[in-house]
Length: 458
Ligand code: FAD
Image (cartoon, rainbow, N blue to C red; front, side):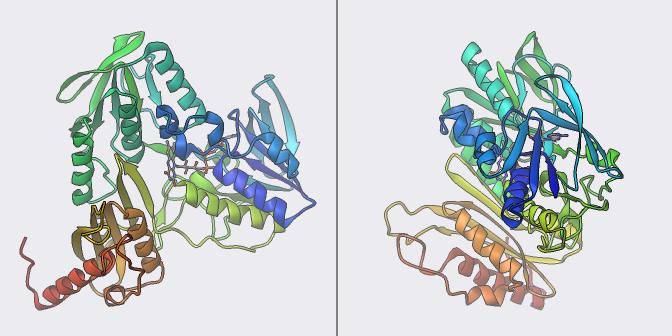
């Protein structure tokens, strides 16, 4: 059996490794258009600043290491066409500029996503970058080495923009962050966004919200930008305003896309075409809280999907399932952990939930214990059932709180269950009552008030 995988980062290489384990005899070939496979793109902002000092540290496995496991990874090879009837692929060798055809018995599409550069005049100036692949980070680093920029502008206040802003600050640059909407970290509620913005400002980042970039200015090289409210000087610009799934190859082959524009797959990661599976940032899945189709392009999800697609492609059967996601995510900006799972209050209302929510700001460990820091936690519950449907946190220990809440949502727990959770406690690790339990108690009070029709005092 010849298994071909298109795309060799998180989902593609995970699918290849799993297929190898499941079927020791299969021929497994991965085509990857970038120069390296298996890159930890999540580490790119930290490579810019030198927190990760070797680019090689971000390459989890080289083609040679894959070869030792019996997986052939052909880098700098782009699959240009899939012929599902004859099970043929057209492949371009980007190094030698040749093209050839290859056959498959089973195929996994893991073509991922790419950055969107909006059509802003001047976006093609030298010094204006996006950050998606390792090659993008190489370009930013080469530019910084050659030009020693002093003022950076980061366009986009999502988690990648925020991580990039922090890492450019680490290099001693004057950093401005420009966000078109009225707050940064838009996937979160306003309480978290305020904390993020405050942390940016405390660390010297100039934050411009509600500021749409209209033009990048400069001759040859970027020198600044114009936004709705004025002008900014900048000799380095990193744009992180969003990504889109890379689906053209699949779509041209007749693979069905879903309502989000990403590839539609079933719970076994099968596409609508026979013997073709898909996984990672190029596919959509289901948000298990809202029950709606969702596109959640994240590295852990890509790995989980790759595991399922690789296993099922190797067996040719529906061996494993990928049920969907909660949309759990986390990032850090200037030591502020920011995590989310399930739906934000806005998302919950848009989905049709009536919500009851409660927030606490408490300590991440016993208040008297050295190093205790504040942490914010908000719980969002479905008014009719009391079930937890979302949580957001910001501060020290946000990772733990996010994971506890994700597990609670996954298990269908409601607020009375949360109040009685038996969680670990000792002074260095948390307050005697976990922030989850504290927030659940406040939530319980909110439910009582909601039942009596009393509004909380703001
Ligand atoms: P991709 O990583 O997009 O890989 C697909 C590969 O396929 C690409 O190399 C592409 O060039 C190649 N390809 C496409 N078409 C073809 C073709 N026709 N032929 C051959 N090759 C092709 N996620 C988290 O969960 N946590 C984080 O902290 C986090 N931080 C991030 C920070 C940054 C700066 C970035 C950019 C991403 C971050 N992510 C994070 C997201 C995570 O990196 C992605 O979700 C993950 O890499 C998706 O893996 P993938 O294999 O589906 O797709």
